[in-house]
Image (cartoon, rainbow, N blue to C red; front, side, top):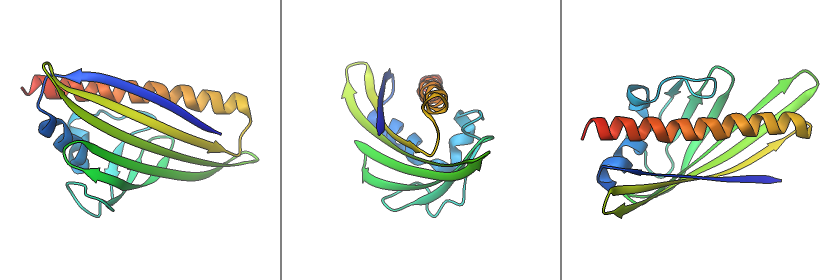
Length: 153
């Protein structure tokens, strides 16, 4: 079963500047501090990202293989990431689709981050813990993005 989440914020910066930051995977470490789920972007096939770009999103507790599956500068960019791991007796598969939609507003740019998350191979209580962590990480990413872009404006 797919879990869907939506996060939004308004950033006082032009759409092009926000899009460029999202697409510049090699420089995420300049504005996004590490966490359990994010540590670095490695093995980039292209930078800035474009349709078909592949990468590895490496965190303390996961390593996600990723690809850009939609790219329409400066309005949309979609990343799909997946990982497989064995924890105790469970063979866990996580697939996450992250779609950014950017719209100009009087205040700058409205950023919408839509998440579609599939987790297989673990019982419901463990799945709810992972979903809670992913929700918190998505909120943190938008907060860091907003702070960085508004500071540099």
